Image (cartoon, rainbow, N blue to C red; front, side, top):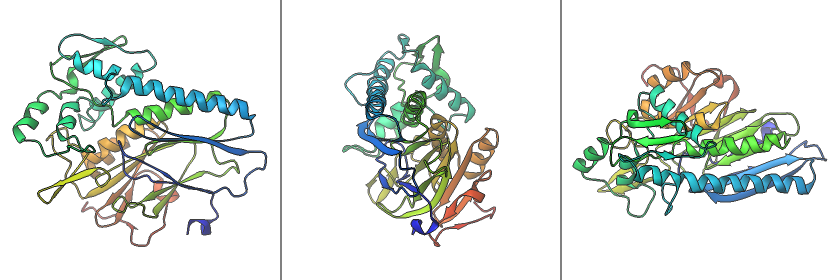
Length: 358
């Protein structure tokens, strides 16, 4: 169906979100310059599938060096940011909570600073200090379960992002038992890091996909924008329902149907409301954020899902060059900024709406 529009379509499972597996559905090259070839790697890192697709005329040896540099950077980030490995800088910070600060590498520190920034900007809707609650639910792992309410309340008492102290390049969690969880922003940071490496190597056309948080470098080799296909989050392996063109931008999506478990007939998804300690309750099923930075898009997609439509729109209005697409359980679609003029709905079951009832 997408071929009928004459696009070079780059279709991803923007399927919905963080901590999940996002796969390249198709990469179809049309009208591509004959001197440009595609080179890529797909690896597993940061708990997800990471795809690096480069389009270049550079010699094979140079391209291979760029790909190896990208993979090494992913390995470095994993060693520092993993919440589930035997050891990492993040785990060291959590273990030292209430006791001492932990120095982090200077090239990782900006991630912690940005996480605190968005916690403040969203009044805690994005909260990197929610690690203790996330661990209680353990959604996405075999022993996922609904915790006792008293345990949730105890964990919530240790989630005040204002107790995350940043000094120099050191991170200190003021309250004993606090735990950071950067799962809602680390993949975006990784995408930005690989984008930096690719651009510094002089590669002008590339797509970086870190678990569904996507960074598009430049435009397609034929000069047109990359088209990202967004699918219905409720249907695994489903066809894209929306095509969104991007150029030198990033996109990240959060939604309620990607990671979940069922207990006593109730479905619990993985996006936790920091205010309640329970999964967010909403008629919104997915939100995709478009931003210049993948780090920002990653954090904001979670924040917008937690905030709900109206508060999310107000937040985005305060941020330059940042737009969002919202999908609701009645198949209605809403956008901010100029997105509506650029995106294309591919499935007639979904429709734009301007109603105020959402």
